[in-house]
Length: 163
View 1 (tube, helix red, strand yellow):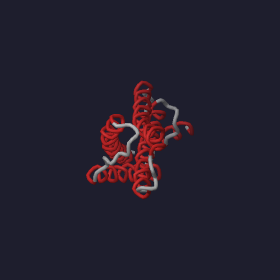
View 2: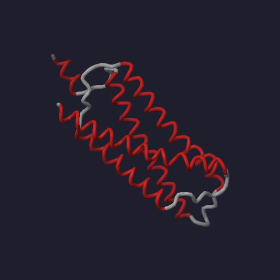
View 3: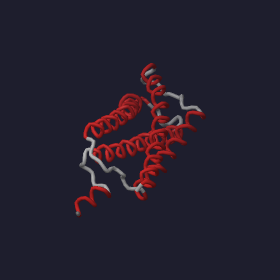
View 4: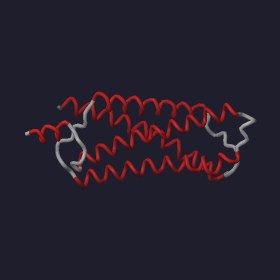
């Protein structure tokens, strides 16, 4: 059980670092979009795209490995800590959703797709990958928060129910 706990901690930390890197890239983009609404933005330069793509890969790899290979190692119920983890998960997703909403509702109607359609497609796919990665991290935090509150099925909880 201890190795499972250590692996889970490493995977959760990896997801947290990747998500923090993604959110750190979202904030400057969000600020730029708000400063210049309605105009085509070309702010995702190569270093930013590299950080975003690396972070998406990091989060996705750690998330899916955890889902299929590593059980939640929560043993004790800690309701307050579980509630705080759930709060952080919702907050992280709200931040990423704000950028997505700004692009979708404010900038998408103004874009002329005839000029550079392929550029908009890859940026749109990158934005969806960021949003999905943050979603995966927040669902992991939700699972952890529910397990800490005693509401998520874990291997330890399943063993207790059998005895």
